[in-house]
Length: 269
Image 1: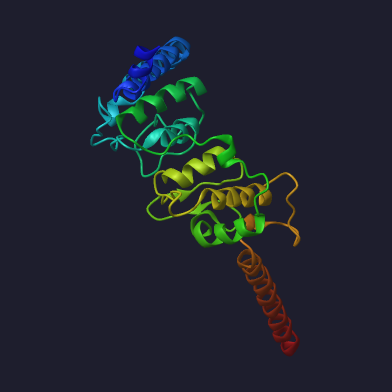
Image 2: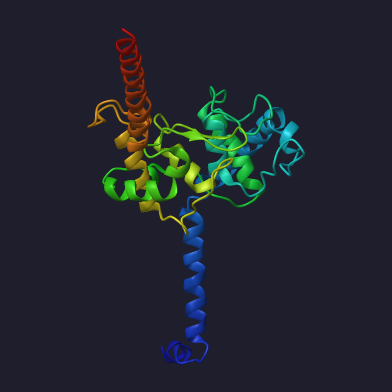
C-alpha cells in the first residue's frame, strides 16, 4: 500500500493517467465511429464526380474546354459553382444548340441525377455557389409586398413590372418568369446567367430573394387577377395609355375627317 501511495504522489502520475485516458478514448472512438459511412460517402461523391466528368466530356467540353477552362466558343466554368450548372442545364439552356447573343430556354435533355453529377464535377473545378436547398428558396411565409418593392427596384427594368419579360439591346431579351420554378429563380439571382447581374447573399440576403420569388408567383399565379380588366402584358398604365392614345385619337381623327367631309358637301349643295 505504501508503494502504491508513493506512486500516486509521483509528479508524473497525473500525466500517465491523462495519457491513458486519451488512449482509451481514441480506441473507443476508432471502434464505434461510423468510418464505413464516411468512407462510403466519400466514395459515392468521387464516383458522382467521375460520372459528371464523362457527361461533361461528351456534352460540354467542345465549347468550354477539356478542363472547363473555356475557349473562343464558351466561357470558363472554373468557379461558377454547382448552382449555375443546375440552372443552365436544368432549364435546357445548356448544352446550347447553336451560338448566339443569348441562349433560350428549351427542353431539358439530362435527368436530374445527371445534372447533379455535372454540377458536382464543375464544383470540383473551383469554389462557387452551391445548389440551394428547398428551405432556402421556398417562398412560404415571405412578405409579398416587400418582394414587389424589391422586384420593381432591381428586376422590372428588364423583366417588366410583373415578370412578363421584355426586349433588350442587340437581340437580347429578358425572359418571361411566369412558369419558372422557385429554385431556378433563386439560382438565377445567385449566379447571374447570361445578361443578368448576380445578386449574391452579400448583396441580396436569402430572405429578400424569397420575397421576390413570392411576388413573382403571386402576380403570375393561377389566381392572379387584373383589377382593370385585360392585363395588356402587365405593363401598367403605359399600355393602357398607349391603347387609349392610338384608338381614342384615331377615333377622333376619323370623326374630324367625317365632319369636315360632310361640312364641305353641305356647303357645295
